[in-house]
Amino acid sequence: MDNKVNIDMESLITLSSFEVTEDDKKVYEKEIGDFLEYAKIINSADCDNLVPSAHSSAVSGKVREGDTPSTWADLNALLANAPVKDKTAYLVPPQKKQEGEEKELPEKKKAFADTEFEPVIGLEVHAHLKTKSKLFCTCSTEFGKAPNENTCPVCTGQPGALPVINKEAVRMAMKAGLAMNCKINLRSVFERKNYFYPDLPKGYQISQMEEPLCSGGHVEIDVDGKPLSIRLNRIHMEEDAGKMVHVGAPGIWGSKASAVDYNRTSVPLIEIVSEPDIHSAKQAKDYVIMLRAILVQLGICDGNLEEGSLRCDANISLRPVGTTTLGTKTEVKNMNSFRAIERAIDFEIERQTKMLKNGQRIVQETRLWDENSQKTYSMRSKEDSHDYRYFPDPDLLPLVVTQNEVDDIQRQIPKSPLSKKYDYMAKDNLPEEQALLLMTTPAYANFFDALLAEYSNTKNAVNWFFNELLSYAEGGKISEHITPKEFAAFLAVIDKGEISGKIGKDVLKKSFDTKRSLLDIIEKDGCKQISNPDEIRKMIQEVLDKNPTQLADYRAGKDKLFGYFVGEVMKASKGKANPAQANQLLKEMLQG
Image 1 (tube, rainbow, N blue to C red):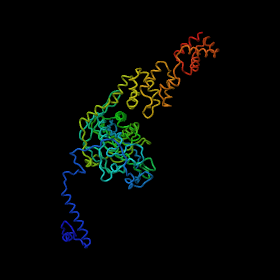
Image 2: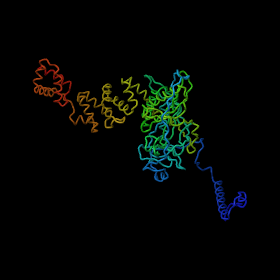
Image 3: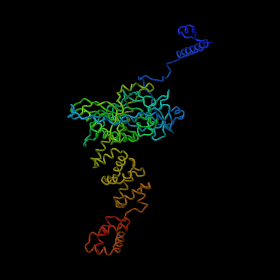
Image 4: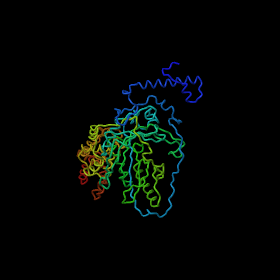
């Protein structure tokens, strides 16, 4: 046997105390020889110029320029070893149903029976960033694709696949931080949050714990006409998990299996963590509404609670009024509307109050809000951060941004939605309901602001915008075929008396039905008012000639018939007669 390394196999066999045949001896001798030969090659390598596959947290990493999505070329091979298939779904075994119904507490007098409690609420809000590709790979983030279509080896956790940070997601996260008055940390670290669940293919979630991108900050909400500041603890970046779709039941309890869709895996998120500064369910709802308004205004999140692109978890505890020590908290999940947030927190406050007054101990746990029963149910015991065994991700270098990048983004941050709301109420005399609508719907606000820049009659603009134009808006957007400049010109035509308000409403409807220009309809469809006095007199005379009995009754003193004649004249003109002129001329001609 030609080995470059001399091996004393007899001594090794003696030391091992194994019975070894001659054939086995030859096999072991070759394997050990090959191993030692490889070790010599590795030892002689020039390690100074090798690129490590894992990195210490002392050096900084690269980010991926360009937010261009792509499809993994060999998707079928990637999914070949998936669990049981049901068409395009991949199934995992069902879980045993848990008892959702809580036992009624027996009534008994306890020490806290007469104590008044104060709710203490902190919110964790997750927002999908509107990037085109995922946080650590180039898979598309498009919503509604076929299950597992937007996946690749990186986001499904295949061995050896390495993540690379999407720079556009970092920019969006910085925008959120600056809009919410956070400090942007020029160095932040991604960490692995370890837990097991079928929608987490890697067995861990890449998040930030010790060194987040954004620290501190605050968000202002309106309370009785005055701003109230809610402090933030942090805003950090992380990847989303996949989605479980339960087969045979609306939820996991009672389903026969659960389908796993990994399309959402590694979609970029920011988690906005508040301090426990919120003290009522309404304040919590208003805070989430404000966060959504800020994120949508920045263009970094669509704010859709139903699709899960904005999700809220509430940490709720109670303490006796006048004390500062925090009570035991419960976390409430599964709230997919602003109304659900308010109702779930109100229910949990009432539940905890009843327990404390009855001498029961609050257990730290995670609870689910059930929309059908309007109650929260226990899901699992609440984990602490140490339970997730956070540690720096060895495949991701620390994220480093420059102060110049921060300053450049800071210049792009618009006025806060709450400030805009107060401006609409003070400068434009809008009622709070209308100002709130503009605050929470940036597309409406942008159109309204541009309209007032072109048209000076604010009162008339408000009337037509809120009562007429928005009645045709869909999904928080106004059809692009009508621009603020054209709408201003349309209102000016009404002001000049060229068309009546009634005709204007008909023109607006026709424009949305046909997607034609407002001014084009007025010009080409014969919508302009008849303002020529001679032409109007001629129509009035024809009406009087056709109604001699009513004319005689009017002249005999039945003044109420004036409205009848007005209607007949407008009918004869097909609504085109200038109303003011028609009324004046009709009065003159009725006198004879």
